[in-house]
Image 1: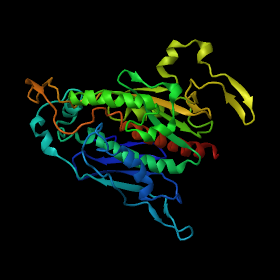
Image 2: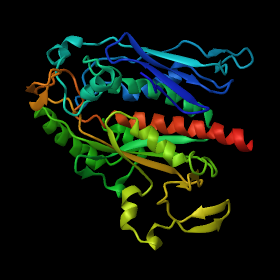
Image 3: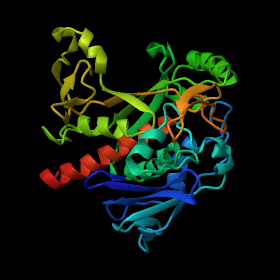
Image 4: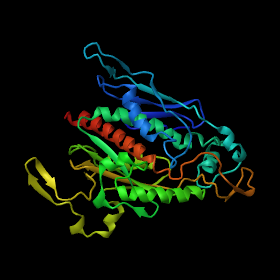
Length: 362
């Protein structure tokens, strides 16, 4: 299986399967002498970790990360720092229940990658989806924690802004509220609504989708390259690579199709610190290059395909049948996609920071 890596100068390769011994990643291209400990990475992993509320899968994984290479103690500072060599990170799987999937080992789950993996490779890992499982995203979150260390002054935050048909009230947006509810929702009132709404869906054995918004502050003007190295193109690719993501927007996104040229144009004025913009429909990127405004991306996550209600399918021999997917699954996989979106944004920006510095030496 190829294409397990992404990035150019900051490059991440992930490994492992949902029900294997461990998952992890190798981060290549991290500059030396950056303070980095397992605790720095663990903070982000704990936000993605399953089993933290009744609204996520009850698989019990501590997701404790181990740094296997790429760091050492610095005698001068007394801190553990990066050496510049590849950083290998490993997370053990401790709560696999492969027997939960034994009844469907020869059935294709609708909405999953079972059929396409089988069509391509002639086999597929029925135990939770193998590499296709959202379990793989823990490795991305670990890599994202390293990426955050590279860019001084940058902040990457994300929030769940819509669940099913229920969107937040943007006038109530409060970043502090994101950490106070199990949905990473910035609207306190909508978070309360989501509790009853998702409880009802979960009790019906069904699932629902969501929309996640990621905002990066502190990105200067000039990152990215025209044509084939566009910052927004790389962001879209990174977000689309996340499990269950079916659509990506930058800035106003699809709403831009409803705006006039006058409405969509981000007008410019001169301020005390140079050029300022009066709006940010472009999402902080013009011509593939950052403007200095917040970089804003949004992605839509489909409903979790593993549900308890019977669905029509076929087996590996082509026989038509029905399937019920038992086991432990997220009723809204979009919830735990919030820290994953942050990680992918951080990785892309770290890569573009290094690419920009290598090209213009600034």
